[in-house]
Length: 596
Image 1: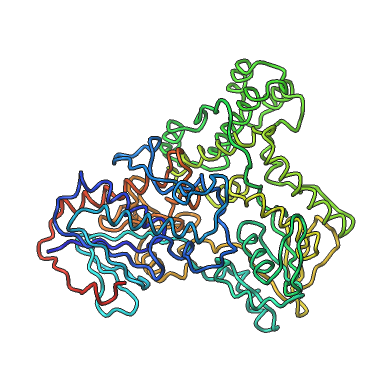
Image 2: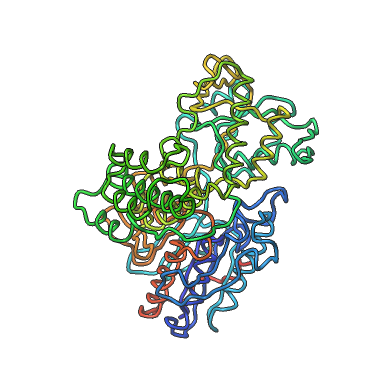
């Protein structure tokens, strides 16, 4: 008569849900037997992305002090707050350090083991080191989870889909490029988690066109340089001779902004101000729905502007012409992007460099044209060096205020569900860039000729037996190569995911959003059907859903949406198990058949 919960995915999200189940169990668990089955071919805690078995050269993308798996007093949850150490406290490292992924993997494993140990007596966790292939079962009955290589499915009162980043089929353009590469003997590496890509196919000394200038590119850069025996000494890179030559470009043509390298001091902007719960409630209440660009973005723009100018006026008043109270009152009356707002800012902030221009930030090379290849390289190196200087100078602390504004905005927008892919890219570009030392390494690699810049709005064609890259940043210049790398993670859409469970779920009636994400009930993560009805026994959280969080991990004291989601789902699960009958639902499988 034991009850059963299956969690598909044992990485950080699955571990976080398990922690919340343990935290809420004293209130909601009735003391009867419960089996929790974690189904994941990778180790629990880290999962695939944060597993220990990857290159020690790969770092965390966040400072150690900005990574926690534990709730704190700022987190608005119904369940109990259970504080715990952030990554730097657990490892004993300086909070500003960027630790290796192996150290993060060890932290996640410890969090997992701590959560398991905190579960009440009678709750047993089984880890199945296999893939889940399908979920079946009527809405009012126990579910069955088909596990690869196991004859009998796992019986489950409830199922939580907590997968992380998933592999995807190629889109039409990528498939066409891949087919051409196959016919022509070229190398095409599709979007993938870089640590899992077959980089041995990229020959030493050969040119490689790279599409993508974000975090996947940084991993690629490291694995193909230091990973092949090169070494950095100060600002100089000493090649091993085994590196390919990387020609990198993207839509923006520049890397993500460096992580900010100083701490906050002084008064914080009181956020949210223009995009808070009331504004989200109003958007959700509109019978006709909302459009992101028309209805949401103006509020985002106003909120980020408020954060920026609040810090400028309170932290650097010598660079303004009016009192903050006067500016704040007039700012509140101006519409985003209006001539009145432009005039107000111009009159109160004399230096254009102190004014916030989100459009210019999103298009850093707009209108930039170079007349030579060397000028393009010098121009990009100058851009990266300037960004490093600015992001490590507290004299530009309005940038940090905008970062805090971005976190606040993301915490509100998660309630709107799928707001499209542009916003997530913009957020990542400003808020989730690489550590400063990585960009300094990039500059050294550029000076050594191992990395070369293509520019913005890069277009790649496959013709005449080669790949060709073109950019309007350097008109008329063409780069040819016999290898192309798509340096980005696959898009987590239901239509193109390679995950058989999600594909089957979608084919059988689970709803998807306009961007192709799995649609879930924002209240507790229950999977929605195409009529908008929540499934009583199936939940989903993570990047494949419209309940994804703002990043891989949570910063302490930020009222994390991820923690709020995990808590709501855990409480819904425990409440269901406590109040539902399990008569006649004996286990029909033996967990030991496939458990680690």
